[in-house]
Each structure stands twice: as C-alpha cells, then as structure tokens.
Amino acid sequence: MNDYLSFNEGQIEQLETRFRAHMVNSLSGFKSANLVGTQDADGQTNLAIVSSVVHLGANPPLIGMVMRPNTVARHTLENLRQTECFTINHVSAEFYKKAHQTSARFDKSQSEFEQVGLDTEYLADINAPFVAQSPLKFAVRLLEIKPIEANGTEFVIGQIFHIELDGNALQCDGYIDIEALDTVAVSGLDSYHVSNRITRLSYAKPNKAPHKISVSGE
Amino acid sequence: MNDYLSFNEGQIEQLETRFRAHMVNSLSGFKSANLVGTQDADGQTNLAIVSSVVHLGANPPLIGMVMRPNTVARHTLENLRQTECFTINHVSAEFYKKAHQTSARFDKSQSEFEQVGLDTEYLADINAPFVAQSPLKFAVRLLEIKPIEANGTEFVIGQIFHIELDGNALQCDGYIDIEALDTVAVSGLDSYHVSNRITRLSYAKPNKAPHKISVSGE
Image (tube, rainbow over all chains, first blue to last red; front, side, top):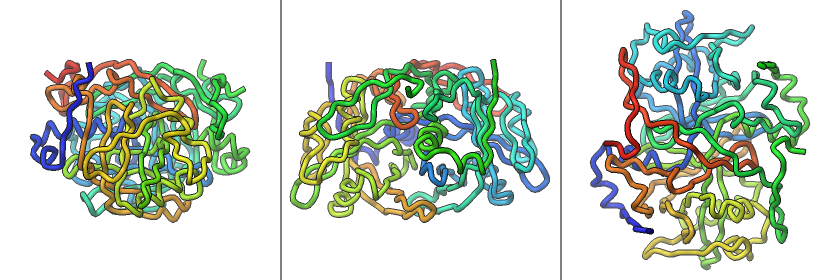
C-alpha cells in the first residue's frame, strides 16, 4: 500500500522543470483561490487568480500574497503600486473556470473581466473593482511590498478596510462558513476542489481532548 | 437568498476581539494544514500546527510561513533559529484531532509528539523530526526570517531539500494527488475539511476555453 518515495536535494534539482513545478506546487497543501481586482490610474481594470493569499493577523486585519513579477500578475502589481488598493474575491464553484482563465496572458489593454465574462462592481471611495459574482470579497489598502530576494518574488502586505459577504454565511461567533459559499480550494497548479467539513474543533488546551463545536459557533 | 452584509473600516475595528479573529481568519479562503517539526540543540522536539504555509516558488523550491512569536509557535521559531532546519508534514483526516491539539500551550520541556500521540521519524542528516503518520512531508533549510513590522509577526522563508511521499499519489506530470492522501484544509481558526475534486484544468491561453485534464496529468 504505502510505497514511499524519497527525493533528496540533488534529485529535486534534476527534475524536469514542468514536473518540478507541478510537484513543488503540491507540497504546501490546499491553497486559497482568490481573484485580485485592480485598476490603473486611467481606470483600466485587471483581474488575476492568485493562490497565495495568506492570513497575517486579525488586529489589525492584515493579509499577505506572493506575486511573481514576471508572470501575468505583473499588471496586478503595477496597478496596486499606483493606486495602493486592491480587492480580494473568493472564487466559488459557480465560476471557477472563468477565474482560471484570468491566468491567460492577456494584453494590458484587455480587461480580464470582459475576456472571461465576470462583472465589475464598484463601491464608493474604493479605487479597485470587485467581482460582482463573488459571495465574499474585501478591499485591501497596500501597506508594503517586501522583495523576496531568494527568487525575485514580492510579498504584498495590506490592511483589510472593507468586507462584503453573503450574510447567511456569517456565524454568531464571527466564523464565516465558506464551505456554504462554495468557495473552492486549489491544489498544485490546476486542480480545483470543493470541501466537506469534518468538524469544527474547540480551542486546544493541555490535558483536554478537543471536542466538536457546531458550525454556528454556539 | 443573498442578504449582503457590509463592514466598513470603523465597523471592523469595533468588532469584539474574538469575533473579529474568527471573521478575519475566514477571509483568506481555505488554508493548508501542516505540522511543523523542529528540535533544539539538545534534541528536545516540538510540533506545531500551522495554517500559513505558502508556496513561494518551484525553482529553487521555496516555501514560506507566517509565525506569531507570542503564541505557542514561539518554540518552533526558537528551534528553527538554532538548527536552521524544520520539517513540514501534511495533516490528514486520520490524525487531524491530534494535529489540532498541538496548538495547546504545552511547556517547552513537553514534546507535542508525546502529548498528542504522534510519532517522530528521523532521516539521516536531517536535524528535525518528521511526523511518522504523515503521508507527505518534506525538510526545509532556513534561508531568512523577514519581520512583518505591521503586526510583529515573522515571515519564515526556507528551501525544500528533501521530500518523502506515498508514491501512489505522485502523478506522471509531477502533480501530487493530495486529495487521495486525505490531506485536510482549514477554514477560519478551527474548521477542518476534506475535499472533492471538481477537476484539473488545462493551462490557460487567451481565446481558448480551459478544458478538463485527467488527474494523472495524461
């Protein structure tokens, strides 16, 4: 059953490039699937699927994401440097194919919203487009971009300053039932998944087994 | 059906602390569930569940994770600063409760391996313990710790130098079928999920709809 495989450093280095990309992208585990909405100073919009959005902290509410300057995400980076603002929009099962298609190399003059068939939505004073179809989305103010010298990527850090969500998913303790929103998860470079909750578990304490808590947090 | 709720900056600030923690932790989407294994110079082991492991790049193979120095993860941080090495081990549905329990505040002298009932596994020349029960795990060499000044967290960057996995999950194009390994995903602070694949999608190209590809990558 368990046919364990090992790869040492030299073997990892010698893997064929595309094979290694698929393999290493699978190692971190399930990834978030988000669409990042931006626009430039002229209002030209851009939309990019990103699987590297990561929670940084709740107080203040901070989020991070890894961007590769040499990929299709470069327009996103250019825009958010200009406007210091972007939106993050959960990808749900209903439109995951359209979300995936935003990763094609469109020209700067082509908006991915139009190209893939998703709708912009604007809220007063927020200088970036939301995805109308997304059931959970928020606006982020750029705080800092940290260069990651080891591979030339950038770690974008921002503060969440506006949240929009389908209220049916918000539970009484603040937990948002993103499974009920059909938010998808990504594995590797290209695999999309919906989820089945095993359970919520109580806050862990030494010498006490965690117990199941209800989804509603009651 | 769609009862949309909005929270502006002032409203987010005024949320009760624990409510905001649950809510903001839900915003990034599904998170990876990994156990980080370390030991100090004396061989005292530590194990901590982390939901912030993020892919940074495949060539070289890099991984990042966010650590909060004031939480139970502090022993992990102390250890990996000393040894410059750590392991990352996928959490599968079979032992997710034990994994969750590692987040209880144990003393430095107590190994979470023993406390929660998971087994250490050592590989030659790797100065950190793996989780024997994990079907996909890898060793990481510390490259850099970037302080995130905005909230006092640390972004740990490392290079993957050894990979161990159940070979049945490795597909012919390098994709690892982590769903077949029962790797779990996390949402919010405490909700654990297994996954159902919708599909893998082909590499996106302009003016061409993405098509389904087989799990095996053929």
